Image 1 (cartoon, rainbow over the protein chains, first blue to last red):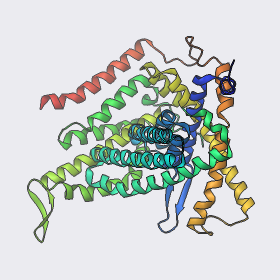
Image 2 (image 1 turned 180 degrees about the vertical axis):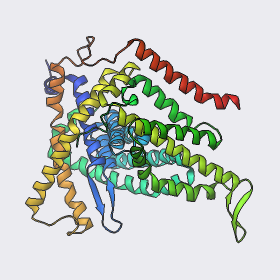
Image 3 (image 1 turned 45 degrees about the vertical axis):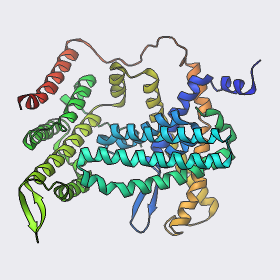
Image 4 (image 1 turned 90 degrees about the vertical axis):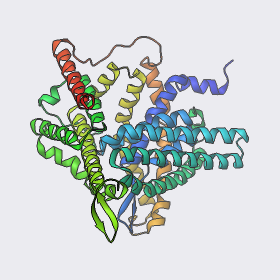
Length: 189
Length: 257
């Protein structure tokens, strides 16, 4: 006899198409968060893009594999649309790895502590730190090869701030979306 | 927002086979990373500028270069400071600011970044999304991966509009002014209900899309036909051959050295 969850999965089209649809939707969301939605920083008249917010949200809510694909493809597509296609292959790999690690570590730690608040907090922290180190470190290395390590070093503080904003926003949105729309748990992969 | 970077045209590069162009893109972008004297990189950059002039226009070459100008300035200023081996050229109060090796490395980095930028820009400007995906599929990209990309492009404008609508709705409900008038922190705090609404509406799209895909036979395990097919024949083979010859020729300076 099918369980309620199995019925829901069948209604949603089975595991294969459900996960494919989730990756496609979250790729589009991450692209929009990276390319369209910008938070102005009044003192500098600059902008923070929310791509990392979407990547961490995807990692913590949908799991490491969705974050690997959507987290890599979304910003890569945004790079192409914004006219920075030379960074697209690098972005695909780095942000995908960022999402994969953040999602994997969050799941590992939160499940190890039976989804307790302390487990989730540990997962958010370690996942965020790992994601930050991977993203900042690999962008520094790739930037070093592309434009020299001097110019690549200038990008490091901005990437750290981007990750801090992304992690904070990702955690807040994960909690908010889970509370407002509990069925989101079904799509975790 | 069209969700596409392609500039329609009828130049020779537009008509060049997508698969051959992809080989040319990868090979030519890699060339700028080869350990060669800057004169070779400069020759390759000039060649790409000529291709721009003959295909989509020299003015188009200015667009990506203008966008990376701040980075090029940073490269020009900082690379000599991080490469101070070799014969000193500029010294101030005993501190070496630039050497011959440092300047050579600076020129190499400037040419590298400019060359890779122009290569990628030209490829995406002259190749439409369908051709890009069919080319990648020809090289082995799985069907599901290309389906994800096409679906994402379909939904990007939809979610961009959704964000604007939800953002307007929240602004009207809150009855506050623009984000600049209410302060940075309040503006950031006001973002979160908007983003939460957008995310929930987005996530609700997953089930209908999943069911639509299943009805269309995705995940059914049967071999799929393709709506679009890239042409074969003599023209395809000659263009592939030409691309391979160009990429192989780019290896000659390394072998010669």
